[in-house]
Image (cartoon, rainbow, N blue to C red; front, top):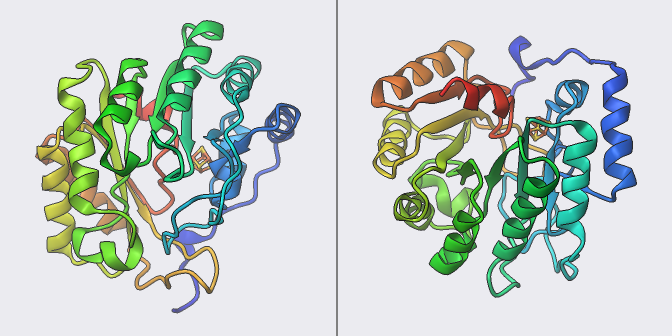
Length: 283
Ligand code: SF4
């Protein structure tokens, strides 16, 4: 792959807020997907005083070929983690808290009760904060999904990550239809929850496949959409096939809006939790 184009070079940001976020997370022994996944926006988001909490450890039971989070055998969940997330949300004064997890296929409910407990803890200490959950597929377990929905987060997101044709290469332990049905399954569970998803460009997908994916997401009731450029975390991960130009992102964003998505972020550095607060407020 050629060197990164100019639009993928990020300016370094130095801001005292970054240290405040780092210290808060370290003091409460919390992980973030910002750090574990090597997100290119971490300097910017930490400077804005935000981060996305990664619960249930920093070791994933799956082995997606795009993701920097390490795989292996995770340790037992920490029953006090939901309370520590709530303390961090309060300490950082977050108005919109985003919580995600590694995939825990080793747990009977995939970790759903920890998502629910985290929502309850944050609601108790920061009742005005909105809560956005980015959940794994819970191996298709509807009871697990229902437990998370019953906790009453404001947004539930589940990322499709890529088009159907690339699932075997990109997410070998996931299933395109299962992920879609997770989003559509939320319809009858809690009508007030906004549904969100995201995917990456640059893995070799075609335009027709991208349009089909967006149509599938709308049919599943998804209202919020994020589209960003795939960047290979290391040489051991899937290589980038294409650095997609910003104008192509803009065009997909416009198409998504015309399909009926209410909130769309489409640009090379967009990630599912990137400026999640302002994306929600535009609804
Ligand atoms: S975009 Fe999301 S994952 Fe990346 S640094 Fe910002 S909050 Fe963290």
